[in-house]
Length: 131
Image 1 (tube, rainbow, N blue to C red):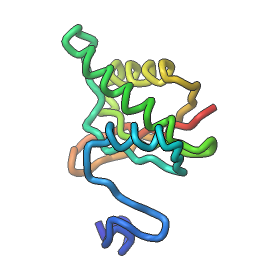
Image 2: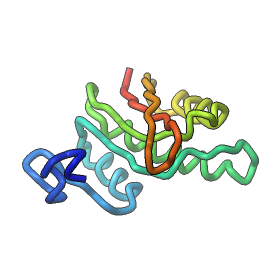
Image 3: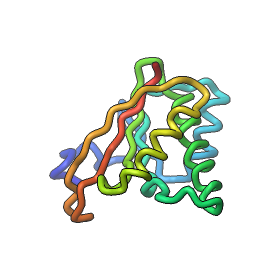
């Protein structure tokens, strides 16, 4: 990681950051209850689902839960960062973007296509913010 971010992540906590390596749902629920807000939420979940089959509904519900909790803890000017999927999976990316319209507050987003060498693919990354 040093090539990417220097010595910033030598420690999981610092004056202006804390990296949590744990289940995000209980942590986000706690922060929502406490009214805590953040400038940035970086979510490193696995790729978004690629299917609309009924057995995938629970996966989309889980993803939407995490999205909604993450947006709730963002400051009004905050940003949420996450990966989407391979750029070639246009339908899956469209399904993800549809989930963004189903959150508890309106959001807007941008996306960027990036070459991820370890995947050997072009990948879509999202930035989401409150309207």
